[in-house]
Image (tube, rainbow over all chains, first blue to last red; front, side, top):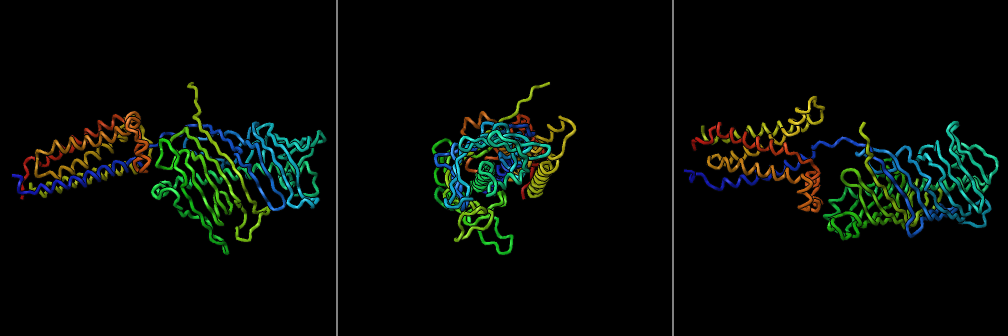
Length: 350
Length: 145
């Protein structure tokens, strides 16, 4: 009876099944997300084997024994990032810094060795003045204490047990370049400014992880050692040159996610005058990313990354072939390790 | 009823079911639901509609062979149940699906979904509903052209 109708017709079941399975999978993009929960993110920025070196033309700072750490509250849906109004830096933080003037004959150039220690949690913000906290800068046995005060919002500076003086934070930040100021104040100011520079480098690391994750499928399809062009944010302003940027997957670490970009892998990012709006800087040079650990999946997540800079310009202005390090175009070498750990905040039922 | 008429009806009903499921995803899931029962129904209704829709499409294909109706219904129910089971953490771990998921963002997103036993029930109801529609539409007494 049914022989008059070709059995080839049954082949139509195949596209029906394929479409069914595809829509079944695609429907997951509409899945209900679990409600956000409160989390705590503990973060640490630390030294690597190669010390972090920052050359700004008139002086070069070498930073060792670095540990900037803190924790902040967030929710499960938030990115793990230091891109926050305030990033509290706790009292386990500090670093050693040696500053060498590029021109030793310049009496006004800043030089010296210091140890910065955070003594009370610093309510730090990249674009905000601290309102609480205290840190010390020790230079040749002389301690300069800097205390954040709220009303008025000033830095209270006390050097070598002497009388305290109030400086507004703008003046305190500028003191590093003020050749009329005393060296202890200048070095304390330089140390405080260095905190901002390190946090900006960490933000760059975060953006590299985001960029890699956004392009993960493409990079995996291309395989190891194949450069993937990534868009820069240049081009808006008149006269702004073009930027170039590539991402390269270098090492596929052994482990459960071998064959894919995952934990322990190494990648490389190369930039040429590439403007990044997220951190508001022009980037030029190469950054090697080791021990890649992206914050994937649901909370609690972790983020880990070792950044290795090689003559890397991290500049407020465009970088060209004639660019040399200066205050607005500092050059960074060495390493910085990022480690963020998210944990769910447990609440006791009433 | 002619074969073409019945195929057209089954396909039309499948399209309606798919459209209804899409509308639920687009609108109903974003809005708060007043009761838990309604939330439960709305949560699993797309599974019911999806199963019904693709079972109906399958039944449209096999319309000339009425004895295949239960086979198509059971087959599509099995597919839906299998995919729902993949969202169970125990099964996903046992099958090492995280490695598989790393190859496809779509599969990765799917595996991130939540296993819900009610969805299995909804899939069963969808398959039965499609079978009933096919029978009531005249699949068992179709006049071939």
